[in-house]
Length: 100
Image (cartoon, rainbow, N blue to C red; front, side, top):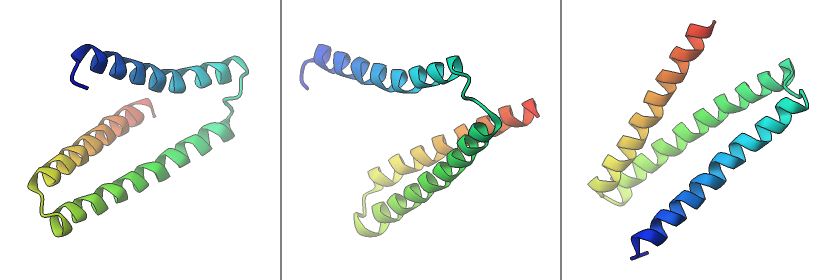
């Protein structure tokens, strides 16, 4: 993608798809009143398992970047992903604790 306009349109299109995939199903579920206690509990539990799984994937990629590939660029990129992952977890837990 040498043309910056093509890149910009591609990333905007991709962002639109991601945002709409998150927003529209939740809006439909709110209209149908499908958010009961069981759904909320299962949703929170699945997010917790997803969080643990992504943390495991980050650690495996970290190990592979150091031991197998010997790439310091990959190590620092994965370190930045890990820091972002944990900072967003910290912000989320602070918001959750302030609501309870």
